[in-house]
Image 1 (tube, rainbow, N blue to C red):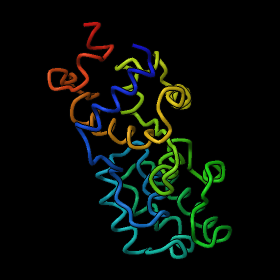
Image 2: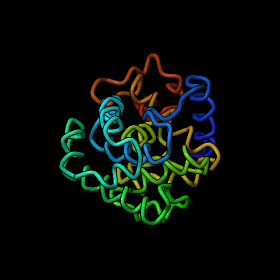
Image 3: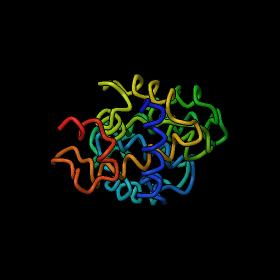
Image 4: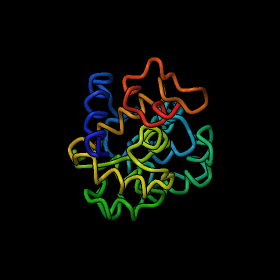
Length: 212
């Protein structure tokens, strides 16, 4: 089985296992996803979803966050870790959205990458979830699972993993595929415990499982 054939089989099986998988960050406006994805660095999505409720209660829109004192933002987002740098990036990012994009977020990948605190993972998430464009989000679950399954060969650097996956994942499947990897990585192919291979829908085609 080629990597492309394996990828298609993995996609179909995960679709059946997690038919409704989507982004686990709560948001109802595009700029809020931009904020949440910055806060999610080295923090769980569940904690971010709680923290942003307080943030938006005090600063309900782009304009309010752009005007906010960075120290006030930091006090609220501190539970997510790296509070100082995250608050600084969020403040700078909201100022740019207000001044250059009329309170909206840019619609192209390269412009997103120019925003403070936005890397390829964040930009891909926004392109896929907000704009419905082809996207591959190489978070920790994605990187761990695609290596274990055998879709990539020992790549740990996010951009290398992303580039390798673009070659074998149909563009229209990339965003949902990565969301499903998150669900599978949390429930079955875990990082901090032994993977639950006996419950895995990919056990008979997984490279790591077959090597055991």
